[in-house]
Image (cartoon, rainbow, N blue to C red; front, side, top):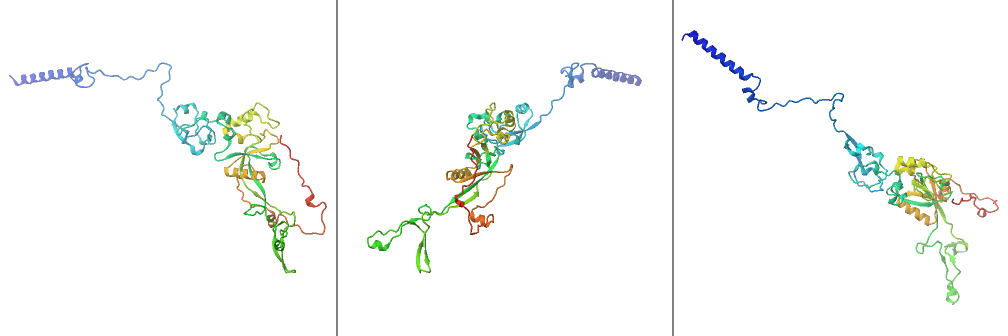
Amino acid sequence: MRPRTFILLILVLLAAAAAIIIFFVVRPSGGIVDSILPGGDDQPVEVVQAPQVEPGEPTPTPTPAVQFENVVVAIGDIPVGGRIRPDLIAVETRPDTNVAVVAGVTFSDEEAVIGQIAKTNISRGQEILRPMIALNPSDITTLGSDLSLYVDQGRVAVAFPINEFSGAAYSMRPGDLVDAFMSLTMVDLDEEFQTDLPNVSQRVNESAFSQGQAFLFPPTKEGRLELIPNLNTVASIAPGEGKDPIPRRVSQLTMQQMEVLWVGSWRNPTEGMNQEWSANAVNRTDVMAVAEQEGANALAQLPSRLRPERNPDLVILSLTSQDALALKWALESGINIDLVLRAQGDSTVFVTTGVSLPQVFEQGVIGPPQQGNVGLEPQIDQVPVPSLPIVPPG
């Protein structure tokens, strides 16, 4: 074979091989490549299409991220009827998908619940919801005295009798602060007998005793023995017959910052508003509006004209147990007690000294009277002390 013919044969074979390769590689379907690559004839290709939007419909928006809201929760158990204290609550976060948050019944500020009264038992870790808070004491009247709802923890309520003079002319109202002035009358006592001094004694006549005669001198109050220089003898000096020692009076400021809970006999200010109380009656709308805004603190926020009794004969005070005991003792001991009214918002702790006759002279308030050669008639101890008539309670 000629070389030229041999070269032509080789070119024909190469062209045939190239045609076969192109046929199997680029044909519309199937082929070697299709069989070895994913998505060939044996594996259908999944086509992802964009979501179809109906004509007139808005384009869907992505789901927003979850937001968190501040929520007041209990960090201690709060019993029904108990006041909510700062140490029993804290602020935590809850997702805005929380049912209570969505309903709008949670609190975000601690100040909104401090001092309020729990209408139900609130467990530790539980959100404090608006329905759990009593709008006013009548919400939970089945729990006992509604007056107790107005008494702060650690204090007690005491009824104290007053008149026009000892009660600051009936000027006190719920929410006022008052102090107590006491005047005590004191005498010296025999420590063993616990009786007023001087003691009464009868001295013995030794001469009469030795002769078998009546030997007791008449009873006399114990005095003292003194040497009489001119007579050079010892004499017994004793108070005159019928003369008792003069009691010493001292006045002092005692209990301070006692809160006035009520003036007159107790009556729940949120009940019976559909009735006329008196000429000083308060409008029902005023009371209920304050009660809804302030909850259990409504009593101290009521209008100053709130007082059912025109001339009350007692006032209800809130004070510590120790002060309550002191007040009870003073009342039962017949000590003169006057309540004095403080300025609004005054929390000063006063430090005073007892006032008696010597202190009055020492402080220069009053000077001792000088002796004179004239007097008054009638005598000073025979003149009645002027006073105003005490208005009977009504």
